[in-house]
Image 1 (cartoon, helix red, strand yellow):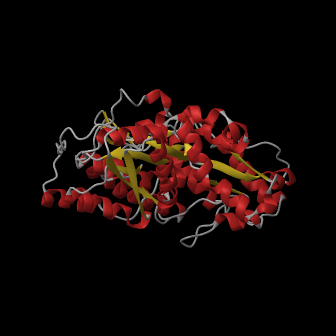
Image 2 (image 1 turned 120 degrees about the horizontal axis):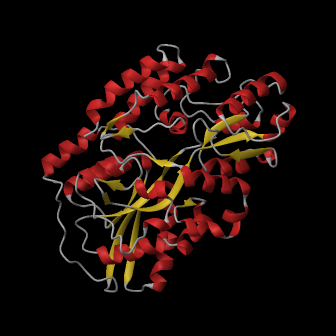
Image 3 (image 1 turned 180 degrees about the horizontal axis):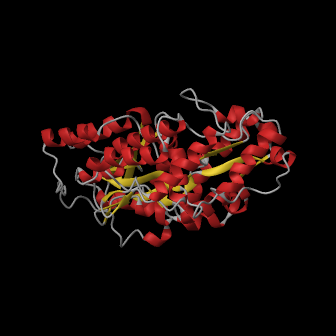
Length: 413
């Protein structure tokens, strides 16, 4: 999942300007999968850099199909997708970040997934559900991420704790024990404000039983929202988490120098710790999100979509099948360490044996999707504002939840 600052209204305005409608254009019957053709693909970030090698391997098995991969930086991905959608020049296949899905499905530029070829049960439920808009599936899950708890086991032992915290009470107690008994500067790192602070708070909200959308409307003033905001804010009120962080803050550095012994983040941090803090080997672990009413994180990652106007839909489906079946997913993990969305890919090798990676599989089984909403960027920013107001002591949890609800009410249709 990636998000850049933007407004969905820009996409809507472009759609109106260039005549994009919810109906879209089917692009005709197109070519069959085995005819000689070139398939265009956009992929973002590291995935864009790595996918070319997979495309070359694919061509060896499918000599009539040339897969042309264009890497796109995440910082420009949204604008390039909006512009291409408006001009009718989307590639045949596009990597789609989870927070982009609702917007581009609403523009009518994506081809619905053929559920005869791609089975929901092959994928983690939350990864599949994040691609559903108005009852139709628009993307096939490619890789997943979710948030779990990272904690220093050596410092926990020094503080007299020998197991991972399983509940909110245990997590708060461990954060306190780290400071009092292991002499850490902080007990935990949680994002107090800034863009995407909601990613740290959402596991609290989901674990409190919250739903972002209920009966077609935001549900951000619920009892669960108030409870989650109060729990989150308590770490700042007690001095267990710092109230101010700089953009681009590197929690792994402080994780390594003992000042921050616990934080919530995604699977990429396992590699960051191994590469940048090798001296921590055997001194840390990943654990499921401690439970409020449940242990529930959110699902992020990326999916693969086909352009509505593509003339190469059959070949596109075959290439996506190659990337998302169990064998392709296991290969992709070896190339990138992206966690497979296909559950069967977890049954062998390091994915099955590494206890920290197994934690992510456990968390994904109960993770919830972020609803595919056209204006998620704006909704997320309103949640960020509410988080800042409670962590900085400017509003009570109840006041912040009420404002969050009213601010998002007009952003969901």
